[in-house]
Length: 557
Ligand code: NOJ
Ligand code: CA
Image (tube, rainbow, N blue to C red):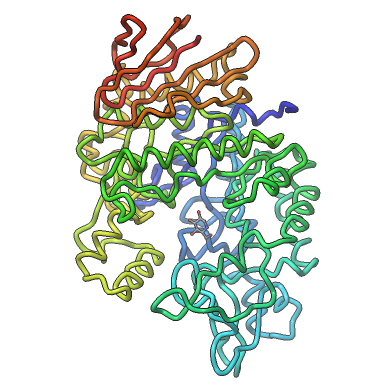
């Protein structure tokens, strides 16, 4: 594999609204990020992905952009953003922005012009169709619930497509003029010294233009649009052009939000000549120990995670590229709550989860607060939530026949807003996040879980993350971690997720006891160095390794 600058990425994702407020208005901002750059540097981070900060009416918290070239005043100014890029670069870190080009906001100039004149060229920047039999053009469901089509005011029978909320009209990528506008905008940002982009919802760029009505798959009469609007054949033509015209000439790091690629297609996405540098891997996204599917059966869920994790690793090993490994992001509940039974959520299980994922082949991303073990914050009332997607899911659950209490219980488990509570910097008033009233309630467990309490504690999760990152970045090991082969080990033993990483003479064995039981493994031979252990000791006697609950060890063989 040809080496690239971004292969050693230790990434950190920032959800800016909730990271650090600097002016007391209760909303995190760019200056707040600048003030915390040294914290991130100290953690060992070298790439920072900042979720959208462009001008936006915030219907989807910034994923509805009304001006790609400007910054929303809520987050600061364009000058602040330029300063953030420069300050990060000075410290040897690169900034990635979120590139949201599947859709714009309905307040974007293009959309406003399109709506005021359906004969203008801007109408063809979006996807507008005639209704059928007095209804929407077809029965696709929006990803956030309800129809994916919205009737255009003042017309008899015209609708526009929105795969997300109705305030996020989909762009028409079939239109070359639109594509040119997007490329020019991307290049303007890259010219400012940006490291690249996380590329939002990109698998939806191309739609199946037959727009058939399909047998409904739910009580709402709609149908999941994914088979007709995700990874549709021909999408690579757009993506390759996008790459050639923007990312490639700037040698940018781009991480596509794409899943469900066939092994054949994966090479064209992440390979050396692929349209992205890498993609976020979704292999674990649908696992939740509290969901109906797993109802607390940890061994069964671990077995499934193991199967899917190694299948993905095997699949990418056939390509000339790398995956991007992560445990959580702003669209998922917190990883400890998803992957660990409630009674076992502690330092050991949290550190085990970190190692399990971050020592796989590829680059890694950590989501803000994960490094201190932030947890979900379930609500007592649905109205304590703020996200449209949450309310739409809640309505959907009621429609399925759940009681209000059961629907809220499901939302509390699955909802992405769990990851969006403000960052817990200190145990003090408002967790050191803001001096004003926070835009979203802070989890009261900031009294125990916060950066200040962990920073100078050798035994804290934060210190463990620092050690883990330092190990992964160590000059004699880093290539094995990034490029080395992955061979599953002990895969017939329930609750164990173990693998060997190997490159040339360097061999590293990672063993995770993903269970609350003590487990004994055969261990012949010896290791030359204990690289990481989330317990103070390791019991190895007479060829037997005794692992304590959620013990994770990494040794150099
Ligand atoms: C994926 C983003 O991660 C999510 O937060 C957003 O709501 C959708 N794309 C729509 O842009
Ligand atoms: Ca602020």
